[in-house]
View 1 (cartoon, one colour):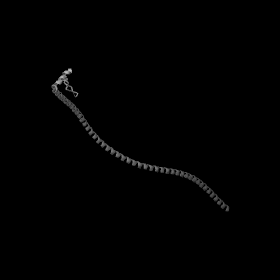
View 2 (spheres, helix red, strand yellow; view 1 turned 90 degrees about the horizontal axis):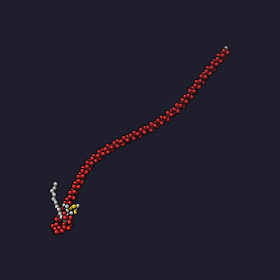
View 3 (spheres, helix red, strand yellow; view 1 turned 120 degrees about the vertical axis):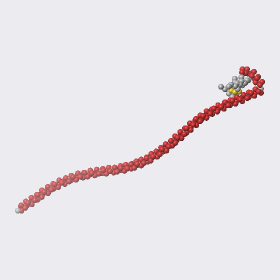
View 4 (cartoon, one colour; view 1 turned 90 degrees about the vertical axis):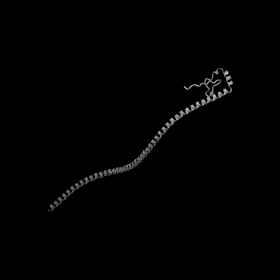
Length: 201
């Protein structure tokens, strides 16, 4: 009876040992698998951490670039506003210059018209002045002729014998003075006077 109990106890112990060994093997395998999975997870976590650090750096760089772009956009917007204001000012200046140019063009047209009128009037005055000068010269020649004629007539009246003596001495000049009393502002008569009055054609 005792041997039977011992055998049963031994069998139970062997069974427990086999079961424990099997459980140990299973736990060992599970632990090994868990260790491998943990190592993979650790590697994945490390990679994720590296990737996350890279994403953080990229995000920071993007944020900085965004800030720079926003500042550039604000500056560009301000420049566009200033440029627009400058363009509006230039357009106003151009409009004012155009009005001024139109006014100057009208003034130039008026001045050109006045200059043309003055030129025409000047030409007329020049022609009139030439005519007056010619009339003055003609009148002066007439006055000189009349004056010389009066002098000759007076001299003939005062000394007729002297004129006759000079006529006999001058020879070829006794034919007269060829009709000239005054030539180039000087008296041409020497010994005789030949005055002819011709009708006006």
